[in-house]
Length: 178
Image (tube, rainbow, N blue to C red; front, side, top):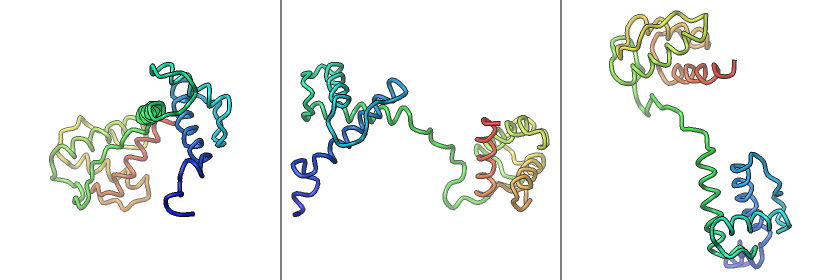
């Protein structure tokens, strides 16, 4: 097989149909919560029905043929579904090379840390109570951080390094499932 033949629709049509079916699954799951399209590389009745439905909705000729316009519409709809259903980005307080937050520090990152700590303290009864966020890393913040470090099996330094922030973030995410 030459390079020109690799992934050529004339020789690998099953691969292209499977890619089409994955896109159709994403669109159908987004719309209905489930799918009846199998990723089997066979352009069967379920695949045909979904292609025709998309063609109708997109104002394209309803012929079941996946031409360039139909393909572009399917890819666009699948990308929209993926974006809509993607896991939200996590909040990154620690950037590469940033030193740990510690007593005496002040600023936006400390404020965010304190807001998260306050939520955790209100949720987990074994943590000390937290005050309103001030943006100043004070003794109360360090005490709460130490309690989380102890709970997480980390050295109790009272400083918020990346490992401590990760432990805080995990606790924050877990609280929704308890």
